[in-house]
Image 1 (tube, rainbow, N blue to C red):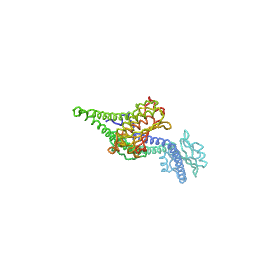
Image 2 (spheres, helix red, strand yellow; image 1 turned 30 degrees about the horizontal axis):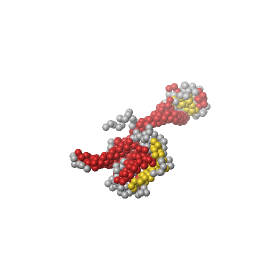
Image 3 (cartoon, rainbow, N blue to C red; image 1 turned 90 degrees about the vertical axis):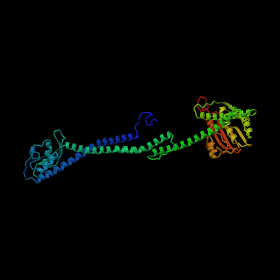
Image 4 (cartoon, one colour; image 1 turned 180 degrees about the vertical axis):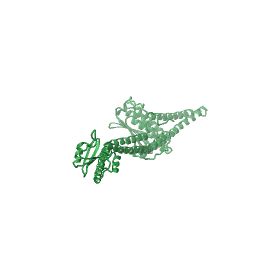
Length: 479
């Protein structure tokens, strides 16, 4: 069996793969946007925090120097640390890449510190500024001392970048961890979402293979659950349709076998010489009648098949329906006499012309008459009526048979429906005749309906338009 997944064309990407790629792409995009947005915010926050920490350290250093103003300690290289800086504080500052300078009046400004910053600090004011050889590369905090002079703490601006980079890196790692978690979650969600779809596809393939005991449980989102319910309804419809087809084929086979059996039996009797003399003509007539019945059954089958095909041919001409009805009445009057059924007509006194196919109209009349005569009991009447109506004409056949219920009328023009219901209960045919009437009426641009006849039986009415433009074009497909 050919695989249904890739035999029809190029292999397509599954919903699971698409969903995983989509969720991964969205997560990656979120990571990128978060990194781009968070970096300036983190950098600004790191700068503010670094300035605040440096200012606090400057305050602590100035306080410590004021407390130890009467003591002397060794000054670090290059003036770093100041002569009065405690060693523990000096080490703590150097650990954070901070340089400390003890500045006295008349001393040179520390490296990278603008002279005006030193002047402001020596004037007794706290200073927060930026400096450096290239400008803006150092953070500067200066605090005046009680005993004179002041202390200046200098920290490279690159510390801010390092701290912000570390913070952004931690954020990025967290986001990447979320991305790695999103991929399996997306895969799991996609598998769970597509499980009902895979079940629906498997069920559809089983139905295509002929299985009819398939039932899907609606689950998942509403749209996917609707697919399961639709497939269940389709499967039920297929079960009913195939059941009707089997019954129809069985009934047609039965109807064909009966005349075939008769023809075969009589033919064997004639060939064996069992039938002789005066019985030969009667036997020949019986064989001819059964052959005619076979011909009628085969013709009905072929016509029914052609009515569903695009090459069903209609030849519209201007025709007098009164003449068509009169010709049909002459034939069915003789048939009715043989069955002890009186065939009456209701025809207009004047001609009634429409544009239609007279052969198809006669086919409609013959099928309705055949059906009516079959169910009409001896001594009853059958009526063939033709009358005008606005925009067209009506062809009607009424009988005195048992009639049809409302439920029967709803399926009267379905192939084999009435045959299936009344086989063995009343005289029935193959169920093809009324189906042909319904489809022929539509093929001629009209419609067919069934109701209760005033004679007590069924009334079959066919409405034909006077000139249904377009539908009766011989070059156009019909039905």
